[in-house]
Image (cartoon, rainbow, N blue to C red; front, side, top):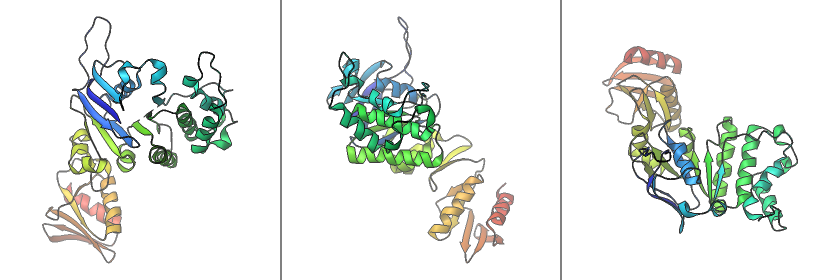
Length: 330
């Protein structure tokens, strides 16, 4: 388990005191789970990740991994406990995929930096687990962004650490590749007991795929919990919302809206899902209360808009319903 106790993070210079970016951070991640680290720009996500990784010294407090206090570990021991996957690209045009994965064994190679016979099976298994066996003899310059990310995760696996930190791992990936990446990380956490902390701006994917979330807000105490719990108790909306940006708990989407009135949808489960999706995409707010002033009812291929229970528009077209609703609410 990863635990922070009264951790203070920030940047400091010699003989100069800097105020920490956040109040004392008291968070944890259970072993074998995926935790999403999320927050708006400037809230300290990267600083927290770099502090846990050991790239920055904490301004106060401690970080524990199991019974080890990470602050006190020498670099070689830290490298055996934490592996880090960054978005930095490897620019060497001649470096091959297997060469990169081999780098993960560096903490174990000793003074001469030579691989042992026992290292080879670990490298092979890391390549197999990430599904890149067919790429291992290709140059890094010849593979796609999604494949590069798998290579870097294979390197982290070869490093054989209980904790893996990833900073914006899906930054250059298309949607199918992001989902593949999350599937791989779930496999590593559930089947191999790896504890994984992901810093990302992709709120919607982490809400659906992470086991746990850490929420950071500027100048606010960090909060933690299951994604569903943090949505239901309003924390996600509170930490990410603004006058126009809101997190729609009924669809799991973030959207912009300048409307005060919210729309209640009455339909069968499947139809309601996609009607709500269309409403959020068009900037409407949703209500989960039937007492809402604006209702959209869908039945027998007909959309009925009601205002205080009185029918104000009826159409058999989804686009027609959206247009009519715009005229009613705006």
